[in-house]
Image (cartoon, rainbow, N blue to C red; front, side, top):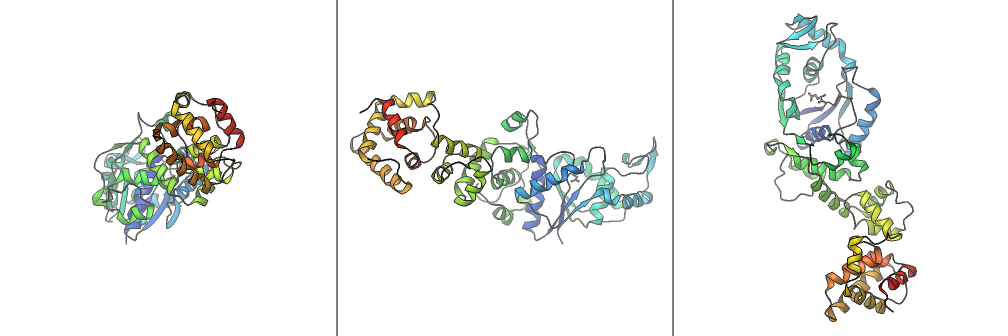
Length: 391
Ligand code: GLU
């Protein structure tokens, strides 16, 4: 029976590196019909905070990483660690208990990480310990404790690490090198995109396809395909993946997510538009609000507005649509007709639509063009007319 464990120390909110370890274990057990145990490494009572556990559980749930057994707590198993300690060939130095030159229990006999973890991995019948390379130096000692208990050690696999220094804008915003799952959630990344990006940083899935769901990754996950080198956390790639996940979402699911980011006051058409215009829920919400209440044109928009093609596009649109507002279906038809008319007049489509978007929305980027039209009001159309001084 394949059995793995995810063993966070409840000393802070769930860091992305820890979430990645959880995902590593999750993918492995789901790929191999195994079982996943959630265990809190909370023997370090100075640093472990029981209040942090609900947040860690909520982060795992948000990511979609479920477990089969637990959560169990090392703090409930102290008597068992003391029992094993009494059987081990230990030495005392400053009172503390040492095994093979390393401290495994305090002078009062209370267990430290190595002892508790080795005992648990045996008692929990863990077949595979999957964790980051930062634990590589712990493995030899844990194997030695397990052998001294007369047990067979599990298999250990250490994944390359993900490095957050330097590039991560999110961690800079938070003013530390750490990025937590909660930071990514607040920045508006969908959980599916976070899992997708983290999973790609762990292994290769034997496909060129980058957009993968959790079940698709689990069905392709293979320890043989684990990456060998550490990698930098690639926020741009996460952004890109996130945009794809958002655009592929079912519209009602998207609407539900966007509501968490303050889209409550937006009309349905603006929510629909928002799904086409941003890479994160935060960006999408901003796009939706900007459509309903356009910002003043930025410099790029001002440049685009003065192009002669912009006035030509506006005039062509004015000839096509006699009355605003229009619905999305009509907007799609009129948009096609507009492109046809501009082409027939030999006007550069790219420049004309760039400028038209700028004068109608104040920005040169945004949702698919038909949505710009479907959210226009007569007042805003008139305002654009006066800005362009066309009659
Ligand atoms: N509690 C340890 C950590 O959070 C993990 C221990 C292990 O995987 O053995 O880093």
